[in-house]
Amino acid sequence: MSRLTIYGDSISGNCLKAKWVAERLAVPFDWVETSVVEGATRKPEFLKLNPWGQVPLAALADGRTLAQSNAIMLHLAEGSDLVPGDAYHRAKMFEWLFWEQYSHEPVIAVRRFRVKFRNLLDDETDRTLATKGAAVLARMDEALAEQDWFVGDALSLADIALVAYTRWAEEGAYDLAPHRALVAWIDRVERALGLPSTR
Image (cartoon, rainbow, N blue to C red; front, top):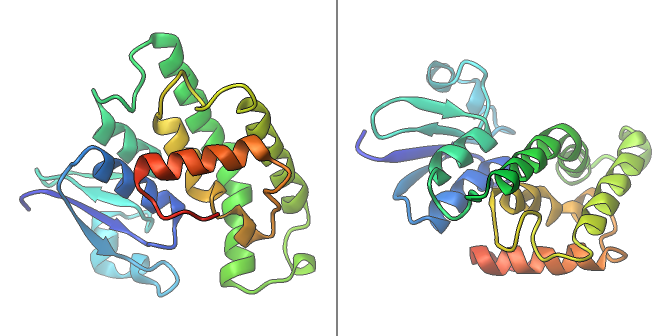
């Protein structure tokens, strides 16, 4: 293995986070499409790489592996401008990364998957997801009301982590229209990362 390999599913925001950071920092890598829906993460050859059976998974050039999207992002971005140099801003970035995995992704991503990929109607999904998701989006909009980025005055890993599923929130039957600051931020991050616009 001569360079970074990222095993990921292109329908997963968590997987795309790692890809976007590698691309943003011009880290050479190979992408191995690994479909969760088709059961690729449960095959013996993948479980040898990651016994948890989850993507993304980064296989480093030296043969070591690293799982969990935010851990992979942090490893790739070490020493880059995506990690704030100021100690407080760096801690705030971690604050948002922890919040994203604990409060954001389990709501926004889960409802999107159920609605878009399982074709479940609202009354067939966990009804609390609608309420919790609305609160998550409102919290983000509030945080962005007077600043362009979640941390400091530049794009950071906090923005990349949070945009991954937020830009697809409408696929989970969430309404982004009332959240003007949030919508403007999505556009900003998409432009900064060179992503196609979701608007």
